[in-house]
Length: 353
Image (tube, rainbow, N blue to C red):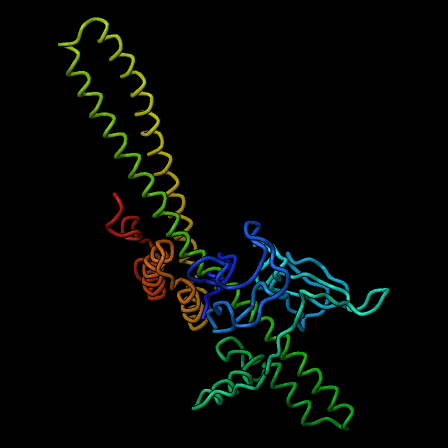
């Protein structure tokens, strides 16, 4: 319902109208609400779920835990509340904002009149048709070494399966089965890391084109401005003959100022041109590196990235244009064709050659 690109770039989920139509919170303008409102009084999020922001903060099934990356570390034994409440300010009502609380304090359990919880029913979602078998086969294949890389006799998973079959007693068999599960989990983690790396590489390719196009627009604008200034200087020079001595002095001073601006724009054109060619060189490296990836994984991750740029705004529309060029160049490069794409080819006819 919502692309990961939108989740990263928008404070709340994509919506029409002001935030106040989607939840009750303290906007700092209207008088603060004395308490929460009845549920369903505001618009739902893109999934059709009501009251995910504001009103009452939600106690979630997400305990304190050590975390990685740029998230703050928590302390074991507590819980997390999200979504903000009727007391929260606008920057505190993001659904993903974590406020960690202890379950108990010295005077008893943690309570608050601006905190609630959401009942959620979970269920196993088994796909229909052949998809279930495809997923099962894919799961079984995790950890298997591709035949194109190693001989079947060297496949560590097959060797492990053989050891399990020939195990002397149940304890040995259970230990080997536990090792196989660990091995599979490790292989799955490696696969996920590869997928994340390929996806990030695909985004870099698309944004490299975006950077080239952006600097090309700036270069084009600087060229146009420089021409306009040059034309204006010519026009002023043509007026010199009929101007009085005092007017000529003023016109000469103005021309001097205009030439400074003209020279600056010409310098900008050179700098933008250098930036474009440097970015193009980087883009070529990205394309040539990408064709070394597994073709199927590259195709899947390009499709994933494409799904993230479905918005109708100018930025996403421009990224889709960049995606089309990147996809075409990747396919040609994989066939061994046109690896050294021309700069005007990569960005299309919209840009100056």
